[in-house]
Image 1 (tube, rainbow, N blue to C red):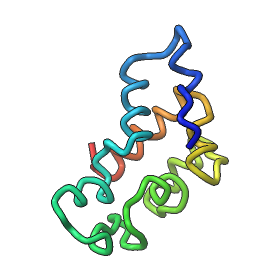
Image 2: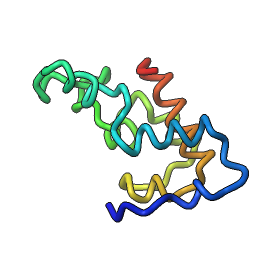
Image 3: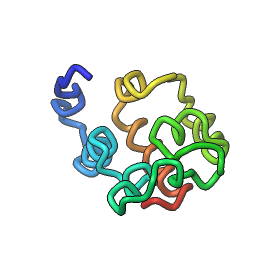
Length: 107
């Protein structure tokens, strides 16, 4: 929300692939249903996650989706919102996003 460049962009140990993945999700250029089906003109109410509970948004898949609960536990995600989530370690963020995408088959 403050449009500041993330600290990890200045880190020497920042892997380019991880940086690209995180940037993709931060900017909304991902393949979650909320974005992918918006581009095809499908209504928001029809963009449900595979779990059938809510619309497949980044917040849903990271914090409340039952299909990714094991990933949240394994990664030790303590964040309650996206701003906090994206302030954590780059490697942890990238690993979580890659694992979620693979679990939900949105790669």
